[in-house]
Length: 435
Ligand SMILES: *[C@@H]1O[C@H](CO)[C@@H](O)[C@H](O)[C@H]1NC(C)=O
Ligand SMILES: *[C@@H]1O[C@H](CO)[C@@H](O)[C@H](O)[C@H]1NC(C)=O
Ligand SMILES: *[C@@H]1O[C@H](CO)[C@@H](O)[C@H](O)[C@H]1NC(C)=O
Image (cartoon, rainbow, N blue to C red; front, side, top):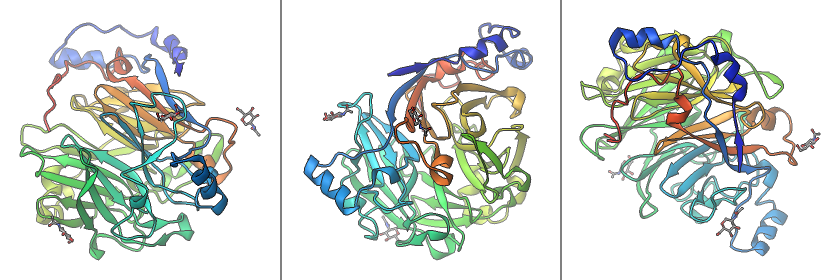
């Protein structure tokens, strides 16, 4: 295992104050600007791969799969992760041929480090492409909830960009992680999508009333919509808003030495606040081609009628500033948000007790080799999990397969924010996780 340290930033923090204990109200806010802009926690490289590989039952079947083109190691790019108990899930879209399974996991019981082979979840059969209703075709970001359910949106697509073929309909699959059985399968309605639809992210909102009080929010990055699924009603609806669209001035990117334009990328990253006094969470979201964050209460999203007619309920937050394109984001039970900063090979933080402004943001992890294109991020039991995959190089150039391309990194949340602007309020919920 490798440990990276962001010592470079120590220099920058010399100017800044060290933290004092608990502070309240106004004093706390005035302290904010004195916090450090860079965290100094060690970043642990948990897993690293040059190429991905799969745990075939034996070497002969693996070789046969390679010979037949069923498995093409160079074509597998991981895009999403999730952590649940002793499993680390890894998703791989079927952008190119030869992806034997789109939803996979690593068992932490047998593989704590290194370059473990991936095991299809729940099995090989249910990872067959194009077997609509019985197999997963392409899965991007996934979410495990506190009710031990894994929420998996299958886009049903094979290929990428202009070559994309919709072989199955968009289908939400919810697995019971304790039995590995599908609890719920729901096909998005034709009205939920349009001809540009591309949904690569899902957020799951559990209300005060337990596991049945659940909603999923799916961000339509290229069709510019938000699709809401109600677990209780077993139905869905689509919301549109101009805040789901990209900023036309924010479509230029420089990542991993490449310059490219992704001008069409709309609503993508989403994170949900803890439940507030009124019984609802806040959904924070951002288009990928944008430097802004937006917010809306789940009170609006959860009500189909209300959601269709609430333009002004959506809030605009301040800009993160330059070089702040962001893929995935996550908020923990303390209201601490983490977001991937793809232009900076970094992860940022924001403490939602403070106003959303770049002055109240810090970088908690950065590495110019190990963190090229942080594609997904999760918080699990006080640990921050980051997956980086060099995606633009894979898409626009060629990965160097003698180099490490894909990594899963971890750092402790408390250590990562220690001394930064994100760490200036008492932990609001302590260890007591409420839905
Ligand atoms: C992962 O675990 C499996 C099962 O115990 C083992 O056979 C394999 O060698 C491990 N792989 C790595 C890279 O440690
Ligand atoms: C939910 O709706 C889908 C399709 O609309 C249907 O196939 C499925 O059986 C329903 N599930 C439940 C639990 O009602
Ligand atoms: C590929 O990566 C290896 C290992 O880091 C390095 O030694 C080699 O120079 C790289 N090749 C190219 C063409 O960049």
